Amino acid sequence: GVYSLKGLLKHQVPWWFAEKYQVRVVDGNGSLLASKSKIDASATTLSYPVSLDPPGYGMVLQVTAYRGADNLAQTLIATLIIILAAAVFWSLWAVRGLIQRRLSAEQALRSEYAFRKAMEDSLMVGMRARDLEGRVTYVNPAFLQMVGFSAEELIGREPPMPYWAPEEMERTLLLHNKVLEGKAPHEGFEIRLMRKDGSRFDALIYEAPLIDADGRQTGWMGSIIDVTARKHAEEVARQQQEKLQVTARLVTMGEMASTLAHELNQPLAAITSYNAGCLNKLDSGNFNALQIREALGKLAVQAQRAGQIIRRVHDFVRKSEPKLAPCDLAEVIDDSVGFIETAARNRGVRIVREIQGMRPELMADPVMLEQVLLNLMRNGIEAMNGLPPERRRLTIKLGQVEAQMEIRVIDRGPGIPPEVLEKLFTPLFSTKADGMGMGLNICRSIIEFHHGRLWVENNPEGGSIFVITLPIDRQ
Image (cartoon, rainbow, N blue to C red; front, side, top):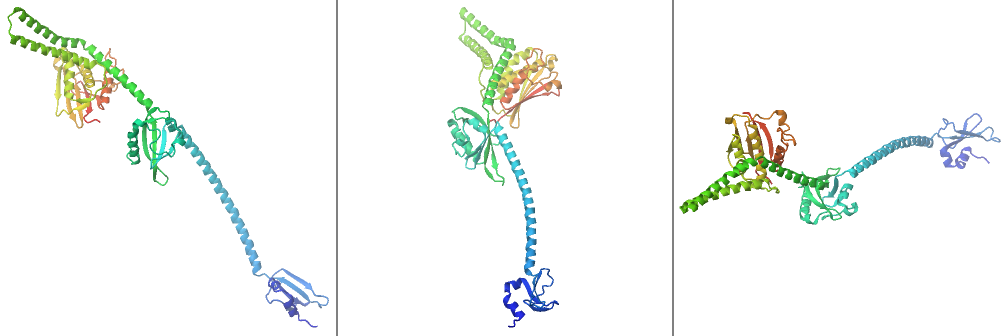
């Protein structure tokens, strides 16, 4: 039979094969005899000839791969694979750098956390954080050591706290509420707290807002300082200061013993005189009851005067706690002058009192203020020893300066050299050969106890001016 080459190719070559390859039959001269497809595939190098001899008479079956879409897709896929591989490699490199930076950041964070933790653990100040409802959210080891509780016993606790002292419960709760309202004192507040074993200690607490990274307040951070030892030391120092003041008053009275004896001798001599006169009248039998009554009245006045002197000395030298009471400074000045007026007169010194303006009362201990004034007046009198009699004048001025009372003790002595002025109030420093150097230091301590100030200035007219200021309204 006769078969068509084109028909053979059309029916015998599968369609899927024809889509990938060009199938054709050529003669010995390369002339095309039949083809499965008319698409040109001559540019490709993927070609495979099959000789049909015998009996093909030189015919060749030629199969050629198309340079078509599939090859382009393969090239594109290969290119994409290369690009993706490069991208993956670059990503891995970038991720490696990121991981290294993250590891470095984590290491730095761990170091910073360890540093801050070590710093918190080494603090001597107790730290306690509370949220806005007052629940404890954090405590440091120093605070735990103060109160004797563990962190598990305190974290999450709500008021009342186990370390609140029962006797201070009402005040502690009031301060707690003030803190939550944002009204805590900026200067801090002192309160008594209780340890787990029931013992008490005094604490100074400062409260500050706790702010997060977004700037929002999340609670309150408290700094707690155990001030028990400090308060005990202050109490011991106060007691020693009181003893020193009493000793100084005794020394002052000892130095003024002759003056006081002379002052006391006057009313005693008058009493003796009036008493002798009355006895003589009674013995003579010639007396007038009115005269005897008058003499006895004068005797009583002198006895009262002697009693006042003894009482004043007793009040001045006795050991007692400071007693703050409404005090008229003019009366304090009068009493102080009464102590020393005789000694001043014996030295030819005239004491002048100048009371200016209103005389509001202030809370003070009059005996302690008398001690200060007496010391300053004695120093002023002694400073004028070598002056002519007409210049020996000691002036005590009292006046009000704004919300303070001011006392000035002014003498006309030689004044105080600048190098001495700086250390005049220093303990154990004295300008006197036999001085202890404690008088002015004690005076300043007494005035500071009354929340006042004591300083010295040189008098432009010669001499020195000791200035005392005391607040009128003191809580």
